[in-house]
Length: 269
Image (tube, rainbow, N blue to C red):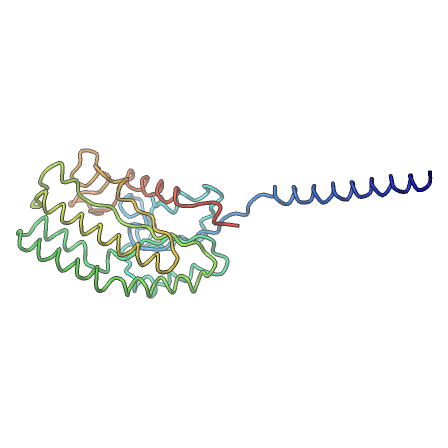
C-alpha cells in the first residue's frame, strides 16, 4: 500500500509540474507584441507635401503616409524627418539618418526623384517643343540608369548601418499622367506615355537597389492608374498648384494603403 501511495503521489506531482510548464508556455506565447518603433525618411513624397497645412520646415503634413499609418498594427511613429526637396545626398547632410538607431524596427524611405531632375523633364514636355521633350527624357533616363544606382547604394548602406535590425521599406513613385484622357498642355498622349515609362524605369532602378540591400519595395503605380494629373478624378496636383505634381489627399491615402499592406507583423518579433 505504501508503494502504491508513493507512486500515486509521484504521478500527481509530475502532472502538476507539467501543467505549470504548459501554463507558462501558453502565457508567454500569449503576451502582447511590443510596439513597432518606426522612423520615416525621404523627400517631399514622404513628407506629405501637397496637402497643407505644413509644419514650419520641410513641407511635412499630416497627410503623409508615415503619419497616417502611425498607430496601425501597433506601429509607433518615433521620428518623422522626411523633407521636401531632399536628395540622396541632402538626406545625409540634413541629418535624417540621425533618427535611426539600434532600436528602430521599421524604416520607410522615398528618395531619388530629385537626384535625376525629373521635374525639369516634366516641364520640358508640358511647355517645350517635341524635340526638347524627347531630349530631356533621354537625358533623365541616362541619369536614372547610370547615376542613380550608385547614389542609392551609398545612402541605403548608411541606412543599414544606422538601423541594423530594422525592416526597411523603400516606397516608389506614381505615374503622373493618364494618357487615355488625351493631350495635356503641350504633352501629347505619346509623350505622356514616355514620361510614365520614365517613372517605371525610376521605380525599377530603385527596386533593384532595394533588393541588393535586403530592403522591401512598395510599388504604388497600379493604385494611381486612371488618376493621373489630367484625369477627371486626379490624385496628383496640377502644374499650376504650388505643390505641382505631388499627391493630393486621395493620392496620399493610396500611398498609405500601399505601405500598410507591405508591413507584415510577422517581420517583427
